[in-house]
Image (cartoon, helix red, strand yellow):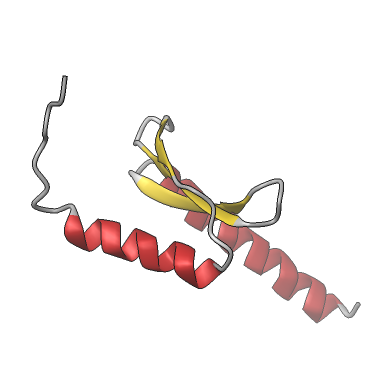
Length: 83
């Protein structure tokens, strides 16, 4: 690998790490693959605690669509207590 390519790769890694660190301190969704290779997401609080985790999705797009729907539909959500 040429030195320029190595430097570019190192710079990309540095930017990715900075991006991750920035969002680690915010409430955020994380998308990951489970043991079967399907996509899932989890919602993490500012303290890093997982507060919600999804079912599995066969495609990345389905996973993203569900996150978008949750973000759009929950802004006016009410709390129902069912005992």
